[in-house]
Amino acid sequence: MLVERLAEVEERLRAACRRAGRARNEVTLVAVTKTVSAETAALLPGLGACDLGESRPQELWHKAAVVQGARWHLIGHLQRNKIERTLPLIERIHSVDSARLLQALEEACKRAARTLPALLEVNASGEASKNGFAPEEVGSLAEIVAKLQHLRIDGLMTMAAHAEDPEKTRPTFAALRKLRDRLANEWGRALPHLSMGMSNDFEIAVEEGATMVRLGTVLFEGLEG
Ligand SMILES: *Cc1c(COP(=O)(O)O)cnc(C)c1O
Image (cartoon, rainbow, N blue to C red; front, side, top):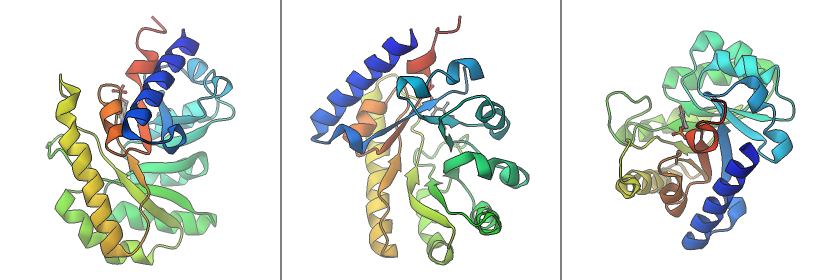
């Protein structure tokens, strides 16, 4: 049952935080609902899981219309022609993956007279199949980021390459943290957030400094079958 899955994940998050000498409230659980129905997603806020993530904008539109009391995170690619409809529904975007999207989101936020917390997606594992800025490319966004007034870049996001042994993902997560430290220093701004860790590797990510973990499979696999 969903309640039990949430409790198991909560216990694993607590244990990972304890090992890392971190407080549990430093890490936000983002429940990734892309594989479940809106009806199942709608149960989550009542069970204390209010931060929900979707990777496809259309799916987010659909679920946001049904689910009450959630804070929605867009965690996948956003095409510019979907910004207008998506922006009013989300609390944060984890997946800013181009300079053009940065600019387009800034303009849309300005028109809507709101701010939007946002993370730059980094392709830290270097896989061709993954979106995001190359690690060596992010530094060149300095000028653009400094000029943003409505989009608030406050950290980085990555996906590690899938590995049978989650320990193998540790260097990717450590590299994202080091890149964050370097950029924060160079840009002279706080970048407190690291969105990293999925079902297979979230405990390692927490040990390496994740402030948001994005979990789907571990919460939902087999539940609706
Ligand atoms: C699907 C997805 C997740 C969740 O992955 P699981 O392995 O099912 O936990 C996390 N982040 C992104 C960007 C995703 O698309």
